[in-house]
Length: 100
Image 1 (cartoon, helix red, strand yellow):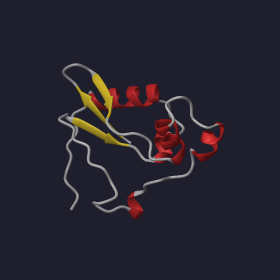
Image 2: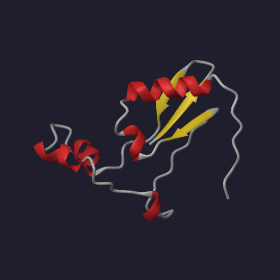
Image 3: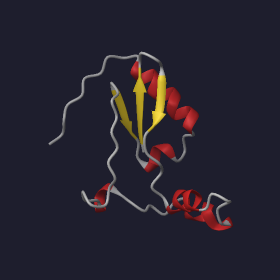
C-alpha cells in the first residue's frame, strides 16, 4: 500500500488499498462482505513480481514523503501504527533517489 505524509499539516493519507482478495470482497460487497472474507486476506491479487503497466493502477501523490509498504508490513501493523511510523520518519531529513 502507498501512504503520503504532509509535514506542513502533519497529515498522513492512505493512497491505495490492500491488494488482497479479502479486501476486494469487502469493497465490492458494501452491504456486508461474505463470511469467508478473512480467509482470503492472504490471497494476493496483485504483486510486483507479476505486474505490468496494464495490471497496476496509478496513484498520484503531491507529498514530500511517500511510503510504500509490502504486505509483510501493513498486515501485522494496524493503520494507526503505520501512521505513527510515517509521522516519525517525516520528522527526519531523508534523501531519496530514483531507481532505474
